[in-house]
Image: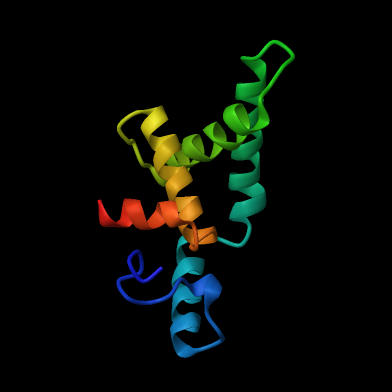
Length: 113
């Protein structure tokens, strides 16, 4: 996490310290409390339904939903135009793995390159 946070920690992994309080406060300025239910959840539902509608009754959950929907969310909600959907899928997958599976040896390869 030190690489991403310029030597610091990500606030979800912090104890209740002044840095944690500052970072949570900053996050709350950017994302409203009602944003999850009013904006994000409906967006995820719509993006998921769009993917489901394009498949005739059979879906690969990992390939078609778990990879595609987060990438499209990053593009639409966060405004990351990206170099194309496949690259954005790859990048969001690496970010997820880096944040939530830091012991993954594959991460060290990508951090160094």
